[in-house]
Image 1: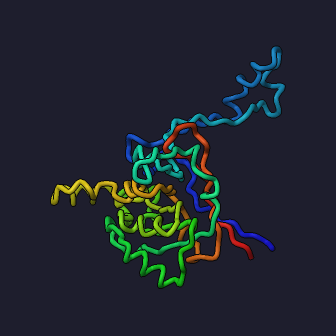
Image 2: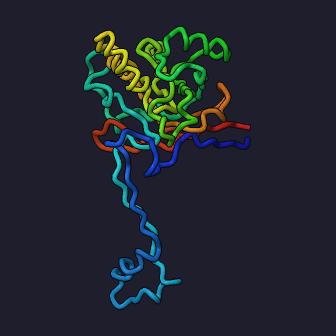
Image 3: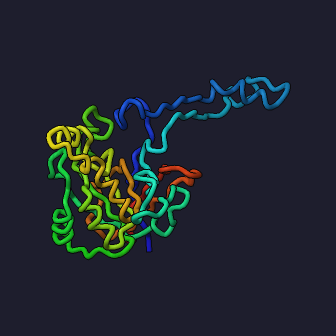
Length: 258
């Protein structure tokens, strides 16, 4: 049976609004002409004009955080503990069987920016699409942020997933979720406004902090979710194994059997 693949990652790119300024990646590109002398240095006596068209190799030097680009967050990112007191696992400890499973897309593009989705919202969308959650389903949230990736307002776009919405999923056995927004939670600017009104610190990063109760992972900065149906596909999101790290880059892909 033929398969169709849809890339639901975004490329790592410098010079766009993809993260807060203090977290932005930098990429130094070395092209074939720039590297020729360096290549020749490996072979004493070789002159650059002896190389095809005088060219060496292309290489890039990156200065990045583990949360740049499309990445999978480990429970350790959310807190030092998970499952009500266990040591939180790091990205190199995430079970691989969590990372390749049937995908489910919830379409929350109509929610206002900064809205915090509830368990009732998740339940209503699952009913609308006719899907019964199964353990290890990978649930991704299509928010309004996806259409703004790289634009000046990206960090202010999209709804967030609250504590109860997150626990609704994880209590049913979901262990990997995802969003096309910068964060699984609502944009910080909106949470800051609400905190200024109420002084309630429990609303800060509440979707992430739900991992303290049930350990789970989520993918942030997904792309092309609008191209996916509600279900009927698999998602592969194996992360880079970085020793003791809070996240790892992933080339997330939706896979269809056709």
